[in-house]
Image 1 (spheres, rainbow, N blue to C red):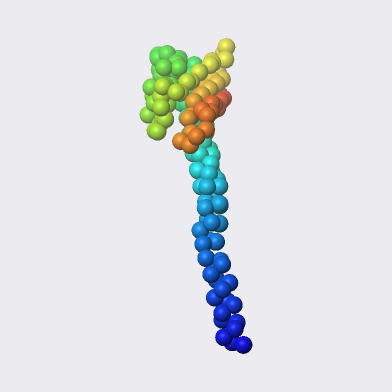
Image 2: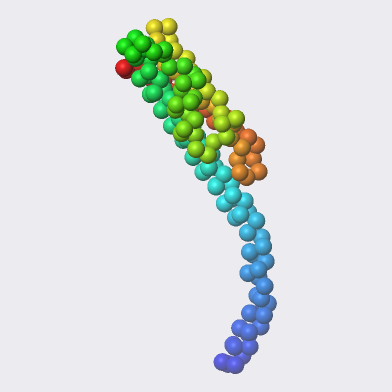
Length: 142
């Protein structure tokens, strides 16, 4: 009986040989596609966070260099070029500046500044380019 059971187990193992390789060949492409997709989405979230931080920091810097600052220091109010050179450019690590656009808008009284940053992000995987944009509004606080 013991000999018969071992022969049956050996025959069963012989029929199962290679099943793991076939299962792996079926699952591995889907698993790799899922992992690549998750990495691309994570990188997109990182880039969006980077754009949002740039917009926030630009609005903060512009609010400090607003109308009151211009009056007290005899300098001009913060311009779009000033913000780009002093805030965006130094902090845009890893971003392609040719794909980045920014717009600075002051209200009529010069007390409220709105900064909008747009970035065309091309994912590292096989996805189409995405437009990431963020708007930050700050009250002049000098």
